[in-house]
Length: 85
Image (cartoon, rainbow, N blue to C red; front, top):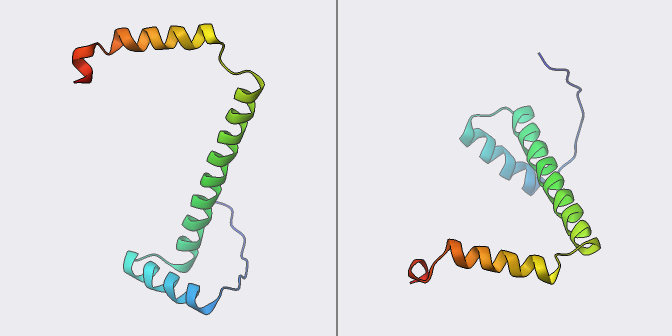
């Protein structure tokens, strides 16, 4: 069994009722649906942070003209004209 902690949260009534409707439809307990929601949110944040790090790195060192031309050439060779029609 994994380590767990109990917390209390307050939600607007409308959100609570929506959450209750969804969790009942899916057959989840309250803890399970909240855990899934938090894990989903944390995963989204990790992806956002990863994208920001990629963008920052790209801004520090974008591709050179030579690299872009090499990519264009490789793409043109990989996708011949017949593939584009």
